[in-house]
Length: 178
Image (cartoon, rainbow, N blue to C red; front, side):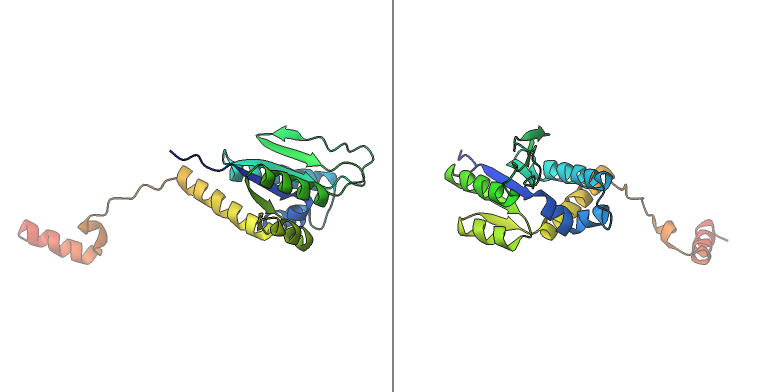
């Protein structure tokens, strides 16, 4: 049996949070720590659900302006979360991860609405998905899950259930010989 090619998913964290329709309402218009933490938590859960066991998944956030950011990945539910190191943009980390994935022979998918990143990674043979495209995919996945978890049992409809009361009374009268 042929072995499936390994896949890598790289999500441009802050770009998706600000551009993806599924996340914008959480952070807008308030960019407080609480709203960003809520949005980041939803994104992590969505990436876990999307990636499953199919993708090696990364979410990259821009930590360039944070002097204490070392760029060390933290793993949450099989997803590696990286804040770019101080002085390095998330774009550079995303480009590097995408390149490394391609060198390793992986199918790489980058989720971002940043045109520069899209152009750069696409030139390297990497697939791309917009932030809204990812948001739509997640909405469909969540809806499919909801439908799977809450199956509706069809009610048995007999002929008498579908007849109006007058017709039913007349048929009963005929049946009973009245």
